[in-house]
Image 1 (cartoon, one colour):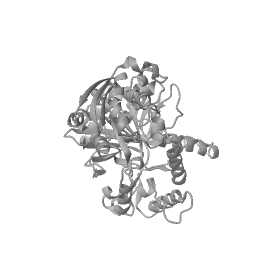
Image 2 (cartoon, helix red, strand yellow):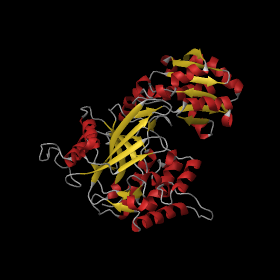
Image 3 (cartoon, one colour):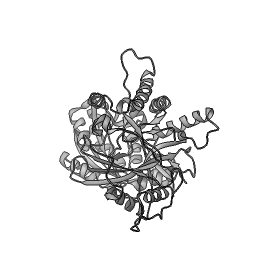
Image 4 (cartoon, helix red, strand yellow):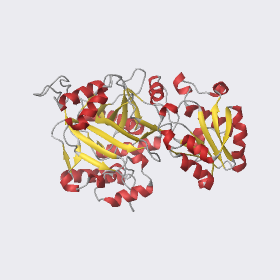
Length: 462
């Protein structure tokens, strides 16, 4: 079973920075260069200087990581940050409208430390996605320099009783008092966070503790949340690179600190969400193929008939079938249904699964039936090029917006010739792939919304 613990977070001192919206940021891996520049200009103490430090003129290799470490130490000393006095979990709520739609959702979870474990059969922490070595190296150098997690990974637990959902609603609904943070970000996502000390620090408390009115205390609710989330394996939803980096860093630290009992570097900052709750949202990641030429792209509409039932459709119909409102409903996913758009026209493709059998990868039934697996096979068959090689060569681009995918093709943006639209991968399929010990193809999921960096920082110290 996984080990989840409260911790003493490092947080911004409101008196020092004024508005948390000015100093928090999206996680490093979704920040584009223009947004990075805007975040640096927004406030001199924006967390992006720690989580995604910029290169500066005259830098030697790795200077930016050393600069992040010096900046972090300086901000801890000058009153920019404070460290919470007691171990706590941090209840986190995100209220949002799905991009491009009128669908409103609220997602709740809690931030805590998750004990690191190597991946393997029967493990307490399960991956679902492959990682890339260059990103791992970047995250490793930053972690080694700063000794802290600036942003959380996202882990999914399963609570079929719905008790965790009930507890989180109670804590966010007033049981934990006023939120310690309330921010609306640039995408209109409303973030709120509550600091909820547990009843007994590092150890499990008494989930049955009651106040004078007979109601569970905030501390006992926090203890119960930890127990519920620890009842089964945690599947990493987002942050595989950070998790693998943390494992490497832990092993390195153990070589020099082997006598320390239960060191803080054995843990990673994690936002824990109930994977069985309907509020967890996964958006599809559409594929856009570049550089194959207009003639080859037009030929896809005919050659696709070898694997799919093909139904021609116009642009408006394709957007209606795969747009944001449809992306909100993950129950639509897993049907082997795709959209195809070229400058010669579009179609809805429905996989004939038996036609894919000769080319399906090794692995369990869950990974072999995924829509993203079918599409990877189809790309290899129709284009005579492996999807991974296409991505590595820059010929395969990704976007969560169906409108954007089609617009790239229409405008021939960076040589875009064909767009393949997907439906979202159901959470149940993600969990099933992880339980089987398999991993999904690259860019299979896009969990939305992302947790902010800088709300809480996890130092590798107690």
